[in-house]
Image 1 (tube, rainbow, N blue to C red):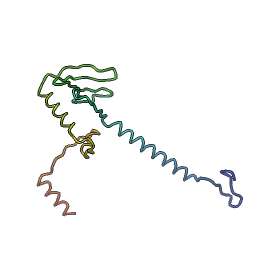
Image 2 (spheres, one colour):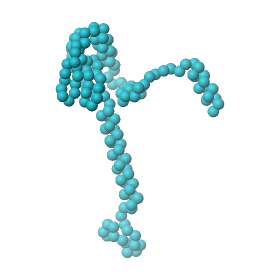
Image 3 (cartoon, rainbow, N blue to C red):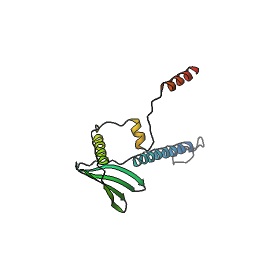
Image 4 (cartoon, rainbow, N blue to C red):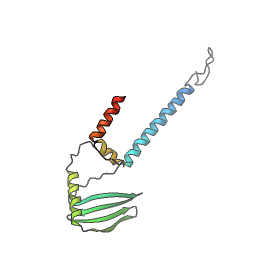
Length: 153
């Protein structure tokens, strides 16, 4: 029997139905959208590079626009503000305030002491994707109001 040919007894067409073809195309579109979404989320997240050099450190980064960044780079007790884009890397200026450099170095050492295999908490994941998060603890009056409202339900 040839595909799409009618059977002599029933006169019906054999082969896949229109509904199964539509369902297959919908599932294919859903899988393609899921793959695109995962790739989009991975590209949107910050790109972390690990530098093994203990003397040369990138203390801070700021994204200024499409392919434009500002970095604070330190060597020993000196630090420089550097701009990076597709056109290259340019020195903007030297940071001479020792207190700011020391604060950045302390923060960098605190970050490097974090356990490497630890999974970040939910708030850190939200911050990584650019969501502004602020943890505020509710006061006793706020808790009391919530309790009363829930009792009314």
